[in-house]
Length: 264
Image 1 (cartoon, helix red, strand yellow):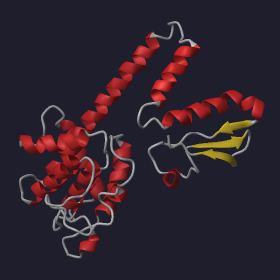
Image 2 (spheres, rainbow, N blue to C red; image 1 turned 45 degrees about the vertical axis):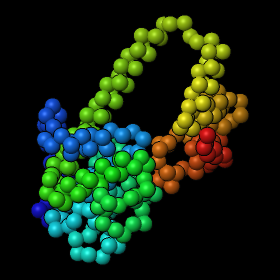
Image 3 (cartoon, rainbow, N blue to C red; image 1 turned 90 degrees about the vertical axis):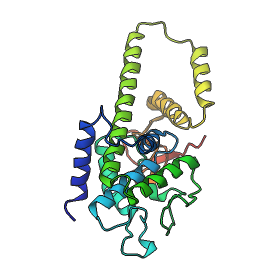
């Protein structure tokens, strides 16, 4: 072990930040796969697979990057989940990188496995193309077409670019909101229409949480109850220590008396 996993990640971050304009990986096909996985918003777990496996491969040069399961039982196998939970979580949180908040190795496609992740494996994940690209990248490292250092740094580079683009979009939206502060407010009918449109969208379960929270906020002085600060909606309740999506307590008290769990 030449250095610590945390130090390896810091070096990769520095390399990624210094190469924002010019890609680290020059092979167009490989670079395209990394960018595709890093930017795919419908599944943010697979990019963590790349980060964890490439980190382990750099930290322990004698392992096979395609074997992130100790259950395989060979000397070149390793625990991808250990590297993911022990190092990747803190790293992506510190730098606000757009990844899954929890380990990739507990997702249905990757948990309870004990096989070498070759391109021939069908992980039954969705979309299939995403998992196929990830398995091909692991094989590219194994075959020497790209180094684990390059895979790690290029993946972080793509995540930084995606993060910065998101920040820019948010800044633009906030600036537009400030411009409209003096505009005529929406009518009650328009507000209801807007809420209905949002509720009809797929994946809008956060909005009902905010609606119920707003109702409690308005009624707080009348009913003597308030809502506790909202936890991250894309993290497990067990991870945040919350009983549900929305917790209600008595005013001047912290004991939860009502808990809401929003599904749709």
